[in-house]
Image 1 (cartoon, rainbow, N blue to C red):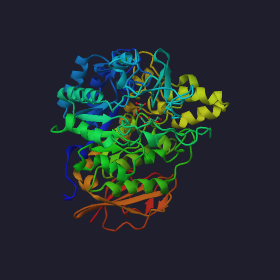
Image 2 (tube, helix red, strand yellow):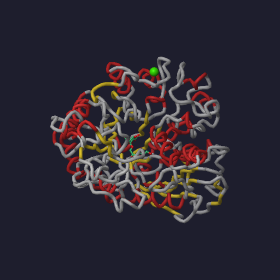
Image 3 (cartoon, protein in one colour):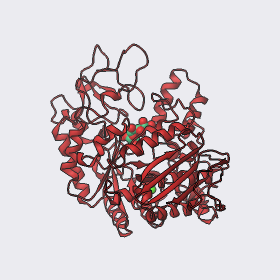
Image 4 (cartoon, rainbow, N blue to C red):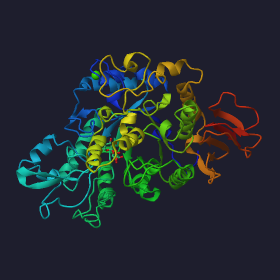
Length: 557
Ligand code: TEU
Ligand code: CA
């Protein structure tokens, strides 16, 4: 083994993300639930994955689908009971898998009892659990904008002050400067860990520390207020907090932590994930997720550029090698479906879905798969504003139409980039409601459900699931694909993504075609042996012709 990279179970793991609301509904109320997940554990285990990441299942009024938590110690009744959650954990462990829970502690719901108390009076003992400020000249304390439209401040008449919310106004930010808040968080983490979970995915992990004084951004009159990320991401005390969290809740337990972390570069990421920092194991960086949209406006969509994409991926592969650990992901519950985004969801859906999976499994890093990615699910195709369920879309639509923006253009942007693209029900079969529910689903099915579903995929000769299982086995049998050093070839090529992985004496060559055209690639050594590929007819001359969306993994020595 490469002596600079220490082996760990979570580095070798394949993580399967479940969005409980949309996974499987066991009681016909149209909402996915814990019993539903339990019913599908054999399916999940059959994929060969090692870890399940559950999006939040805690009590919540669901302004932001569970990311607004009103009680960290209770299960959302729509999803089930604590006893059912315990059955789920046992079922996961029985099958040799692990469970990580979502930890959302930048903010709570405004219905959390801490906030209910906090807003009662200026001298309430919970007042300082949140970030309250006086207005300035009858306006908000500063010009920060919330992630989901409008000001990041909400005026509260009762005490004549504003509270900060980086997300919706039903998600007030906790005041991490208050040590009582931090102790509450660590206590809650220990409580869940003591129940036997195997780690946390930590929401918005780099936003807990705000710059003192909460300064406004630039010139308030320029009409183009940016999100004030520079004043709340990677803030002055963030590493003190995350290290303290590690010490108080994580140290001494064999669990994994992965932080959601927009706005980092490899060097700043290492401040969180270098092992000697004792903070986090890994983080989800966002650079490759921003590739086809403007930094300021996610609805301002541009085209995918492979050269730029390769540059970002290569920078992260090289930047963390031997010093930290990457997360290999192409989508989650906040991103559109990757086949529609970076692949071809029409005639090459199956090929491109498999190619993109091959990419995830041949990079250094832990592999993260989002439900439905294993069958190549595509964007939902919801084309009416009334079909959307995401608060981000509603708020944006309200604001943008008030500004006179064209509604058809807005819907087109949502159809490409909205989070609801990946939140429509998991497509299990061609039965009514795609086998997801016997009732009326909380959000419409994706339009493709009759053609793309688990049942159909399993019967197909070109099954994406089968290919996925094969990738899981491949990665297990070839540790160089997990730990090996990465080297990019042809960085300027606009269609092919080609790289080598090397660990001591074993080497691999990965060739991925990100285009619908065929391409010649002649630099493959004659002695190369094909380990896997997404076309059944592989041909015996190594890699001369690379077909549309083809993926080839060769062993070279
Ligand atoms: O996301 C936080 C985040 O930084 C963004 O990627 C956000 O999702 C994006 O701006 C929306 O387009 C996390 C959760 O993953 C997300 O689901 C929650 O809504 C958010 O935090 C608030 O808890
Ligand atoms: Ca249900």
